Structures are given as structure tokens and as C-alpha cells.
Image (cartoon, rainbow, N blue to C red; front, side, top):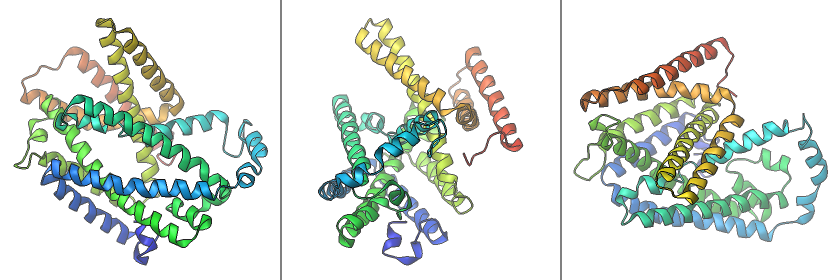
Length: 365
């Protein structure tokens, strides 16, 4: 909506009533579209992905052509010295590593999307290749689009640049016309990403229902083979989240932190399971990969701090209710081990709620 605001003034800034209402309309249109066929939505998503990658590469090429070494190296050692101080401009080294780690977790959330949708793929091999290609492409885009702008504008100028920042940077580098291209690219990119993120949670919950960890209604497919109930529930939750942005500027930062902490736990469990599975089957290379994965996630959890992980326990409470409903529906007896884990998490969630009300934990960071 901020990008659209560059063309339609009523949406300027992206966080006002007009923008929120328009975003909610977008949300339900995309939900309706996916509800009428995941496969057809996936085809459109492929086209949109191609359209959104082109402006990104145009940005990288134009900024590279405008790159000035003098701008990039100006005050380099002064800034470096400041950043390694215990109380530098950007905080302590530990704080910078922590924030970078959580940002890395956040920007790579969804890299497992091909795996989630692999049941609809032609083969598991295709899903594996898509994940690797997607990861490499993301790394290349992130590295170049993050570093090259510092050869065009100073860090202070980039920090103050109007959103979307890529448009502001290109306007300085080559002119207004390039900024228009990027703003259009951002609009297409966001709609495309939104389409992906409409499909992904619905597919995740469908698979969970198939695995009998959610009630069967979450996995029920309509005539178009789309999990209608899951789509509606996730759309309602997104609508509520969008409305929250009218009342606080911290909604996005809080949600991104919580999401990063949640995916961190999920990835860690993936690594631990890979260690167990590889050990049982004596696949020692995969065992080593699992160790690296689990070790990295544990390190990230330590760096993220106990506050984020404690807050995360609150989000598990409705999950326990749904799991209980699914177990009752499937006549599955919840095990003693499961009950102990639930009890511990519930106790931590209560503690998190108490800390929130007493101000020991703040959702504003």
C-alpha cells in the first residue's frame, strides 16, 4: 500500500484506514481466488514470480552501474570502530549479532514452502530442487540488494529513505523513472508473495489435519481441491492482524519477531529429528547435517533471548485446544509425555502473560 501510495495519494505511508481497508479487500480476493483452485493459483503465482524477479535484477544492475567506491568507503573505519564498541551507535556487538540472526530467520521463512506443497508436485525431487534454487536465488538477491546501495547513498540517508527504499535509492541513482519501475515491481511482488502466503498456511493446516493433529474439518477439500475451512480461518486471522496496525506501529515488528522465534523452534525440531533418523539408519553425512542444523537453531534461540521464546508459548495454547479436539475426534489417547510437555508450556505461557501485564516483557521490543 505504501508503494501504491506513490501513485494514489490516499494510500501514502501505507498505514492508514484507506490502506488497511484496501489490504483487507486484497486479502479476501486472494483467498477467494485460491479457494477456487490451488493449482490454478499456483500457475498465476509462477507468472507473478517471474514478473517480480525482473525489477529486482533491474535494481541490482542499475545500482551496480551507479556504484561509487568513495561513497561506499566513506567513514568505513570510523563506523567499523563504532560498531565494535561495547556501546556503539548500533548497540553492542552481541546485540547486533542477535538482531542480524533474527532478521536472517525472518527473511528466510518460507524457504521450506516447496516442501510444504510437495504433495502437489510432480515429484519430491522437483520440490527439493525448487528449495535449493530458491535459497540460492534469495541469497544472491539479498546480498547484492543490501550491499550495493551503500555505494550510492550513505547509511543515514538510506535509513531515512521513503518506503519502498529501493525506489528511493534508484531515484537518487538514475532518476524518477527507475523509481516508478521499482514501485510497480514492489506492488506485483507483494501481491505475488501474498498469494503464496495465502496458499502456504492453508496447505500446512491441511497436511496437519491429514496427520490428525488438527480436526478433520481443517483438511476437508472443496470441489476445487482447496482446503476451504483453513483458508477462511487464516484469512480471518490476517484481517484481525491488519486491523491491529491501525492502533500500533509495533504490530509488524512484534509479529515478525514472534514468527522468527516460532520458525526457529520448528527448524530446530527438524534438525533433531534428522539426527535421530540418520543415527537409526546409519546415514552419517545426514547425521552431521542434522547436528549443524540443530546447533545453529539452538545458538539462534540463545541469541534471540528468553523474552521472545517465552512470549511464543502463548501462541501454543490455542494449538493445544485444537490438538485435543483432533485427538478426541480420532479417539487418540493423549500420552503422559504429551501431557507433561503441554503442562510445562502452559505454565510458561501463564508466566509470559504475567510478565506482559507487569511490564517485565514489552511487545514493543
